Every structure is written in C-alpha cells, then in structure tokens.
Amino acid sequence: MAKGKFDAEPTKEFFIHMLTKDIPLERAIIDLIDNSVDGAKTVMEKSLAEIPYSSFRIDIVVNENEFIISDNCGGFSKKAANEHAFKFGRPTDMSSEQGKGLVGRFGVGMKRALFKLGNYFVVESKCDADHFIVEEDVAKWQDEVGKWEFDFHDVNGEVTEEGLHSPLLESDGTYIKVTNLNDAVKLDFSLTSFKNRMISEIERTLNYTLESGLKIFFNKIELKSKPIQLLVSEDLKPYYFTDDISGVNVKIFAGIGEPNPNLAGWYIYCNDRLMVERDKTNLTGWEGGKNYYDDSGVQKFHNKVAMFRGIVFFSSDDPTKLPMTTTKWGIDVNSTIFKETRNKMIFAMRSVLTDLNRLDNAEQRQFVVDDSMQVDIVAYQQEKQDLTEEFKFPIIKKRDFGDDKALVSYRVDKDVLNRVKKHLKVSTNGDAGEKTFFYFVEMKELNYE
Image (cartoon, rainbow, N blue to C red; front, side):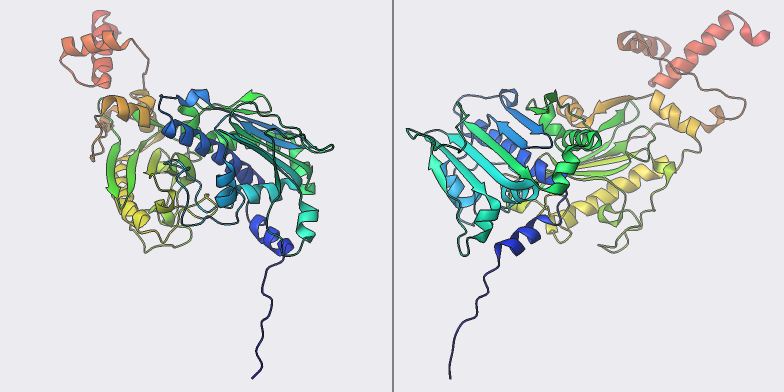
C-alpha cells in the first residue's frame, strides 16, 4: 500500500490574517506597551538595588507615516528574542530571564501588533551585552516559503549597512518602528478622535501602572492615571476580601461611587492590567447579557443602582495562572479561579445592591455622596487597613426627605468637625451638620418667624 504525506504547513498570509483580524488597533498597541511594562518589572525584580517605577519611561509616536514605541525598560536579550520574543507562541520551558508578575502569556503580542500596524518594521533591543536589530519587509518575508525565522544583525562592533536602520539606543531598552502602514491604520492615525481615544484607552487600561510612577508619553503628552474611586465615610465602608487561590492572589472591593450608569459595574484586573471594565452582565453575576453561567439570582442592572462599583485584582508571579483570555482583553469563563472568585463577587454585590435599592430618590443618593469622600480605594486600604468582608452603609432617615425638605451640604476642616462631633456627642457627619444647623436656627429664633 503506497504511503505519502500531504503538506499542511500554513501559509504566512493566512497566519498573519488570522493572527490580526480579531484584535482592535488600540489593543494591539497596548500589547506593545505591556511588553515595555513587563520589561520594567523584570529589571526591578532582578536588580540588587531598589529601582522605583518612576525610573522608567515609554514614548509612543503616532502619525500617518509611522508608529514608534521606545523605552528604557531593560530591553530583551538575543536568548529571549530566540526563545519567545520572535517565536510564534510561548514555549513551556521559558528561560529565567523573565521576571514575575507580568501579563505576557501566550507569546503573540509583539508579532501580532507589528503585522497589524504595517508592512515594514524595525526592532532594536539593548540588554546588557546584547545589542541587535531586526529589520523586516513583511511582504518579502511573507513570500519566503518555509522560512519562519527573522534575521538580525549585531550592533556591537558592526558597521550598519547602507539603507538599514542605524542604532539609536544608548541604554538598555527597546525601540520599535513600523512604516508602510496598513491603509486602515494610516486612516486612524490621521484622526484626532482616534488619538484621543487611544490616550483614554491607555490611561484606563494601565491606570494602576501609571499610578505606580511609570511614565508613558503619547505624542509628547504625558498620560495620567485614572484610578477607580469609591465613596468612603465613617458610616460607609466598601466590602473587601482577599485570598490566595492556586497561586493567584485575589482582592475584591465592592462599594459605591457617584451615581453614573456609564461608570457602574465590575472592573477586573490581572497583574494590574485592566481586562474587563464596567461589566453589568452574567459574566460578573448580574442578570442579563450572554449566559456564561447559571442565573445568580442578582437583578438586572438598573439606573437606580448606578452607584455600584466592584473591583477585582488577580495577581500572580506566573501569568499562565491568571484567568485571562489569549487577547488579554477578557476573562476566561472556564477558569476555576474565576468561578470561585465570581461566587464571592455575587455575595458582595448582593450586600451592596440591597442597601442601594433602599434609596428612594436622587436626593437620598446625593445625600450619601455629600456625606462621603471619594478615594482611590486601593491606596486607601493600604493606608487604613480598616475594610472587612462586611459592607457598611449609612442609615438614611427617610422622614428627612420630602417635598417640604431640602438637602444642605458643605465641606469643613476635618479636625474642627471631629471636635464638633465630640462636643455634640454624635458619630456621623450628618448628625453634626443637623445639630449645628438647628443650633443656629434656635439662636437666631428663626423658627418663630
């Protein structure tokens, strides 16, 4: 019986199309930023001296002719380039050069981004003694059947060939430049609206990285962190839970913020990288949306509970344990770690929603806002350490609200307020405000007019 083999090797054109077709341009760019952030984390971990996040900088340049991202975040060695940076997929026997607490997991981010952006790229890396450049015309590489390698040339002691990229890096870091941009990319890069959207996307996705001090510049504009804020007062404390599950640390915060349906919902991070934001679907325990799981018994989202905010942090030294999808823009619904965490999220959400549903109107919701302060809840817990698995909500005296009642709110010095509360023998800011108001009314005999 005659035997033979049929060629099943994929064409590069098909491979590139499948790799890039489902990822939005903004997310492909953030994949490249992730690599720089991971580099900074690796440098900090392996350094004998303490290096602050503020020592690292990432610069992004976007225009109709080119895309450039450069950093001083340590670069990657030739060994790392061969093992994973230019390999399609991440091998299981990774080298020890990689740091801990990263988000790079599947080994496709940089290649996918380069192919998504354009047809000619330069990657220059300097890492300790290694300094090399990869320069590739994608169309020519695509035509080279059976060749899946990328050529590189050493910078150290070598003369750059005429017409090729001249080395730019003087310190350890990475420089990436993409030209001959794809038509859709060129169009987006010409739009101010895209650039503004890109800035907002980076600031939201990497808000806790930015808050740690790492600097990111987009077309020379320094980006700012946008941490999620929750309301806190003496009588209002968010729910807080933390535990380690199979090598992953989990932190859950559930509480309230200002009434805003556009900000309400769950936010989920993996190693400080935003994966899910403002989710109000079955994924995070609400009723509604695609049914990933059995009904949790929690209500559908309604504007009446638009104050709800939930934040989940998954952290692990090993990114393969994190419950994120291959695109790093979603949660793996089959993850056992996420399923266990989701049960806790539902418990916390029920507690918060029960109290929010007791508020009858906008005036009562505004009363809670005015009697509280907005805080970055992560920094707050690190400093105060006073949050527990019990959600604390102020008592609302509904008799104080109605057509003949008006809300009075103002801000005063905290130290003076605490002395006033001690003198009046009250515990809440609202009671202090009420007693001082009526004290003034009685002193001026205004209730007799």
